[in-house]
Length: 393
Ligand SMILES: Cc1cc2nc3c(=O)[nH]c(=O)nc-3n(C[C@H](O)[C@H](O)[C@H](O)COP(=O)(O)OP(=O)(O)OC[C@H]3O[C@@H](n4cnc5c(N)ncnc54)[C@H](O)[C@@H]3O)c2cc1C
Image 1 (cartoon, rainbow, N blue to C red):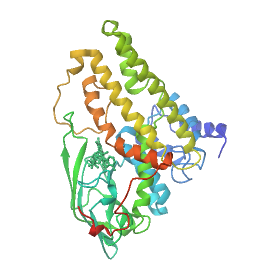
Image 2: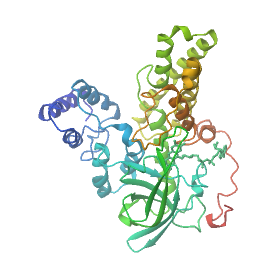
Image 3: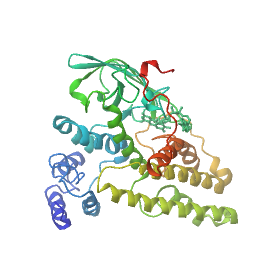
Image 4: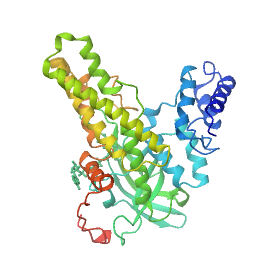
């Protein structure tokens, strides 16, 4: 399927059969998935039509014009951005059949059990163990900073299955049921007062072997697919000009001339140009994606996104002076989405601090760009061939 007109016809047929003004939201989303119009580049039967990824825009434009509901992508960012492409690439037919539809419709939210205390930037050092017991794996360990774990039905999980092998080779990738006995989710409060993320304790959790993604010991390679997609999901979203942080500060600038100074004007212009460069680079990255899977280039867009979000939210707070510092809502909340643009400037400023940590710290992304994009010499690694159990931790 490569014909935009045919895709447009199919989208209109969906709208004719399921008038979005009168159809239940979930029924509409399920019908859209079944018609192959969810993510058109996925295979037939799994929400797609095997079409070029670029044609998704044809569907999205038609549906938006008809006022059709979306699948609330902010609520299940990890599912849509990271779990789905990994399951598509490495999952069995049964796994794709079971997981992708309710993931896409938002009926089942996903989280990512990767980071641990002691295994963040050096993720391959992780200590959560999975020990095989017949047809199941018994998982014990602790994860941390797990966004959405309090809403999640499923998690993508990496765990150590062979401590005798060097750290990158003894890891296996699983899908973990967050409702299983032994999974305990505890909130962690952030600088904003909210608790979007959590500590997750795994005690004797039994994961069926049927929920293993890829081969035993192949977890690191598969995790790279997730992490590369994560960077694109965070930094490479399609956005109109002046969307997000830059739009907020530009609006304040236009509406409040009394706040302007020459110095702030220069910084606003530089931030505006930076945001436009990042937006267009994201567009190019998406065009590359149509030709295959994301490569390390996504590290660049994620890095730029984090730097700009911090610069622009800081500029807005300075522009607003005392008013910009007026954020004082420290009530404990367990939000379902991160709302950058619907909240006040002080909130945005505080939340943006996490942008240079989540999805890989800026320091690590610079290492990736240096090594894998620019081809500069790699960081010295003395632990590459040492069995994990012999590493100092
Ligand atoms: C808002 C938010 C949401 C998150 N959500 C999730 C989630 O859903 N699931 C999940 O699994 N994780 C999540 N994380 C965790 C995140 O991926 C980790 O915090 C991150 O990978 C950094 O690991 P760390 O915190 O252990 O820091 P460390 O690895 O201890 O790093 C500390 C500092 O040292 C620097 N550093 C470390 N090694 C090097 C090096 N070789 N060269 C240069 N500098 C280095 C780091 O860049 C950083 O500045 C989230 C984090 C945040 C802030």
